[in-house]
Each structure stands twice: as C-alpha cells, then as structure tokens.
Length: 401
Ligand code: ZN
Ligand code: ZN
Image (cartoon, rainbow, N blue to C red; front, side, top):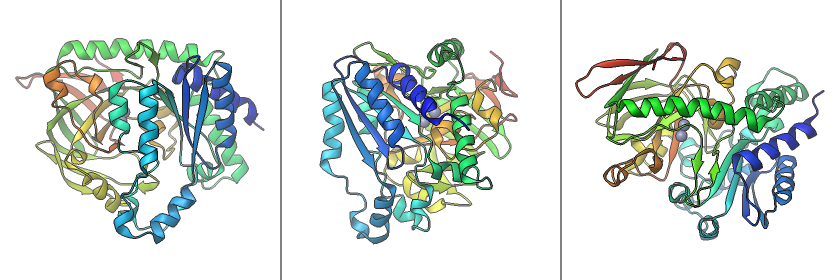
C-alpha cells in the first residue's frame, strides 16, 4: 500500500517551490477539479508556508460541464463568463502565481456527449490564457493530480484500488518524487536539456524534417526561432518551470511552412474529449485534412476555432532519456504524454521562442493550443539548411548534435 498522503505532500511541495516558484506576498490562483481536493489543500498549505498572501482556488466540475453539453442551447456553448476572464487579467495585473492540477479528473463525465458540441466548450481553458502567458507576468505550473477515475482510464483491467496505486506510483516516478530531493533532480535534468537546446538554436536550421511510421513532415522555422527546455522567466526575472514533468525541447515554427503528413503515436484527451488515431495533412502551413479514428469531429471543430487553430504553434523534440517514454504507459493527459514523444501543436505559439520583433509578429496566434504526439523511437529528425542539406538531430531517441 502506497502512502498517498506522503506523495501528495511531496508533489505539492515540488509544484509550489520548484514548478510555480511561489513567492512571499504573492497571490496564487489554483485551477482544480472535483476529486482533487487532497492535492489542492496540500498546495494551499505549501503556498501559505512560503508566505503566499492569498490562495484563490477555482474548482471545476466535469459533471456540470456534461449537463451543459447535453442540455444547453448550441449557440451558448462558446459563452465564457466574463469574471473568469477578468480573474486571469487580475492575476496578470497582480503578477500572481498560477497552478493548474491536470489529469482527466473524471473521464467518464463526458461519455456519449456529441464531440462537435464538446469541441465548442473549452472551459476551464480560457480564451485569454495564451495572451497572459505571453505577457510573462505570471509564474505558473501545470502538474498532474491522480484521481480514481483517471486510474481506471489508464489501467482499465486492474482492480480500482490497485489501479489508483499504480497511477500514483508512475506519477511519482515521472515527477521524480522518488529522488531524495526532487527539485534538485529536476534542476539537473533541466540544465542538461538547456545545453542541447542551445546547440540546436546555434545551428539556425531553416526547417526540421520528421520521418517515422505514418509521418513525413517538414516544418519551417523562423529566422530567430530558438529552442527552449522547460524553464521560463517572468518579466520580473523570476525563474519557474511551467510543466511538471517536462522532458521536451520546443520552439515556435513558421506558421506558413509545414508540408507533409503526421500520424499521432498516442491518443489524447482534449478539453475533456478523447481523440485517437489522428492523421493530419499539412499544406503551406495549414492543416488541410484532419482525420481521427475516434473524436475526429472534436479535433476538426478545434482546428476551425480561428485561422491560427489550423496552423502550428509548436514543434517539440523529446529524447529517449526521459522517464515517461520508457514506461510505455499512455496517461491520456497531454502534460505527461507529450513528454514521452516528440510532438507538434496546433494553435498558439510561445512568443519567447523567437528573438526579433519581426518574428514575434509572425508566430502563430490562436485561442487554442493542442499538442499531439508524433514521436517514437523510430522517428528520425533532421535539421535542414536553407540549401536543403540535412543534419541528423535525433536517431533512436539519441541526440546527434
Ligand atoms: Zn510541448
Ligand atoms: Zn504544447
């Protein structure tokens, strides 16, 4: 029997201290879900111990979302209460900290709901989220919070209590809670990844080509596209780690140059809906054909949200040294699964991934950001020069540069 209370405490400490790096006197906003109360309370404890001025908890109930998706008038499904948008603006004005406790809290909540309707209600994700992120005013962290429902989804054949134990065990492992000092272990991994990111940036590739089973995609980069590991700095110079766990190197591509096709190597859960067997074709940067074995309508409705939703905002590479890919588990949670494999994202880009004003004006903009995983050990990644010469970057999960 695992000591869930102890793991919950350790995870909360890691997220508050290392992840969001909550400062004395700061307001901390927590977005959480019904079923995640234990971790939410430990996060509040850790934040107040660090001297937080106020911990502002917003608890979302997927079963209430279900009632809306089933019964509300279709024309109202895009409605977002103004106060939710204002709360995020307030946090930005306050230079507050933000923590989101992710992981499908209650995956059965949206079972049987019309996927096209589900794609119209993105709450609790807010339309001004990427705006606030790009302002760099808040130090934030997204971290996983295990629930019984999530455990049943990941290990459908195990007895529920055993499934819950296994989920905790694997989450503890991928979050490095089994290290004597998890924050130290993450600092060391981040340093190693940052060095590789710097080497990639120095090469100034014109494009990146990804080839693997069902995938052959060339993604153009902008002249000042730079590669980042999972750390960030606020406008106030505060260093934080937006994702726990994080094993990826990512950049902002040229939204007008993506050509070829990709096949997702893992299923994903987007805004409460399941999408599996994704195949997308790109032409001139645009997703011109979006298919999926399951949830295709949801994905198409997301890709039609606005012009940028059908273009790429992120290209991320993941090596074979991370702890997530090695497990072979699909968590149905992008935060974790995206770190198992190289991925691309439709929608908004991270502006700090380019250096010049001219490129900042060119990066992709959208109200959505949806990552899907196209990486596998078979994925071959090459950097292309402007003259088309190819330099190997990743082979069998190992860096070649
Ligand atoms: Zn990513
Ligand atoms: Zn992403």
